[in-house]
Image (cartoon, rainbow, N blue to C red):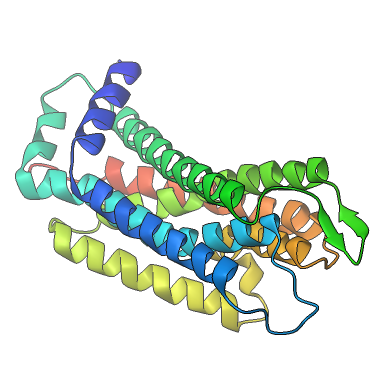
Length: 264
């Protein structure tokens, strides 16, 4: 049953047109940022444009828009069902509400990871053309071999894939608060912007889940510039915070769905 629910939710999600339009805008912004970085004039004679820096900055810019794409798609997942009246069908089908929630979560997470993978592949393709993927070298000294840079790239993608989990749960939860898709999307985007600002302004901002979404690529930008960095904070703080928020938000979303009167 759960597998069939996931399949149906995935079909509904991927059959819509607006995620592809949003993805096109994200990819255009990423490409523009990477081209400007490669073709732009360095600030000083010591600045050297490297592949990890270009890839990370391009994907970092794309991710800032992807966050809001996930908020829009996730907020509409339930609110659109309420708007169209199809949510009432859940009461006459032998489907548990938690399975319905899990199916929507799996399809949203799958879409998010697919979008992240598309942006990553596009970045690698652009980097392969210019400046070319290779070791980070400064004045003839190899600071980071290409193999090490690749490991960091995969680590950043893996961490980001985990960091977006609470974002997906948050978007689904907001969608359960409204019967109107437009209201759900507007509130989700507004709250997402507020949380992102809080994460950047407060000293305790690293305990806000959106704060960590961009951190892996910020680390890779440092590597591309030949600056030292460590994954310690991302693993010891970012990962527990992301997983903790994910479980809490998912529990709240489930609690809300279980107590909703879908006939009203």
